[in-house]
Structure formats: C-alpha cells, structure tokens
Image (cartoon, rainbow, N blue to C red; front, side):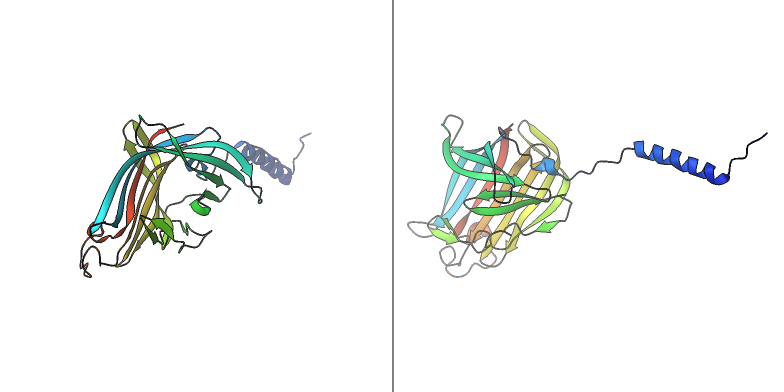
Length: 255
C-alpha cells in the first residue's frame, strides 16, 4: 500500500534542510578599522621630524628656526582608568641624529574602545579616530577639551587647536618613504581653518597594523605688523606668519 505524505510535511522538511544549510554559510566579517590604531606593550615607532619655528627676530622682522630631529614612542605598560578603559602608557624620546643618545621628552597614553581612539598628551585628550573609519566621517578632535586652550610657542601664546575638525578623506591611499611602503592608508584631515590672521592646517596618515605613519601640522598667527608693517595684502602664509610653526613627521622604523 502506498503511503501518502502530506504536502505540509514535505514543505517542513525542505525548510529544515534550507535552515541547516543556511547555518553553515559564513557571514562576511565586519572590518571596524581597529588595525589602523593597533596597541600592544612593546610596540614602538620612530620618526624623522622637520620643524620650522616662526618668531619675532631680535633685530626686527621674523626669524625662522629650522630643526631636524628624531622622535621615538614606545608602549611600556597599561592600566585601567576610572571608566575601566584599558590605557597604554607611552614613553616619548627625542634626539637630533642617529649618533646621539635618546633623551626622555614626555609620557603620554593611548586608548581605544569600540567606537573611538584617544591620545592623551600634556593633559589634553585628543579624539584621534572613530570606528569604523569611513570616508567623509567627521568629528571634533578637541571634543574633550577647550579648543581655545593657549599653548606657549617661541615666547608667545597661540590658540593652536582653534577650529580643529577631523575628517576622513580616504581609506585607499598609499604611502612610501625610504624602505617603507604601505597600502590601505587612512588619510585624516585634523584641521583646515583659515582666517586673515590665523592658519590651522593638519593631516595624519595611518597604515593598517602599524598606526601613525605621517603627520603634518601648520600653525600660524599674524597681526601683519612685524612682517609687513600693517599690510599683508595677498602674501602667502610663509611670508606673513609672525608666530607659529610647521612640522613634518615621517615614520622610519617600527615594531
């Protein structure tokens, strides 16, 4: 005698098979971009740094001091803060050339949660990155302190962080310097603020699995008095700046 199987049982059996098959399909993993800001005890980064400091000259006009140096940052320890966030303690060293000994400069800390990455330096908490770091995402880099904080520069005080706003410009860039060559480079504009008497401009570049590989920062103030006798006209900032600095920082070694 032939047994008739109700169609509803057949349908349920098919659904079970499909469900089982569906469970073994691997969902694509989401990339939140944490590798752009890696943190581990023992990590270190060494950079070449070119600095140009603009200041009033002793005999009138504007003097420009040019300084070449090297910067090393090494992660030495960790601790948890009041919010239970794991912080990485970073010792910072400087020297003028390969032949000079490293000199302690500062101690700072880095931290990262699921949504943001931070750098705390000189008691200022910078919001360095947001996750996932998608192109055109923006945030206030000085969200955790007053952007009008004055910083001493070459005998004067400058509101260095005025108008800072971070924006991700690209995730697909490349970067090459010396023997180092990186793809999937994250480009972040950290400032682009310009008035007739103030200039704040900066960019940072991060490579996956490495972290910060390059930084440029231009901070200029002028009253058009020392440089130009009260009339700057259409002079470029390199000619009308009376106080401030330019910094170029490039990775040369890392672990």
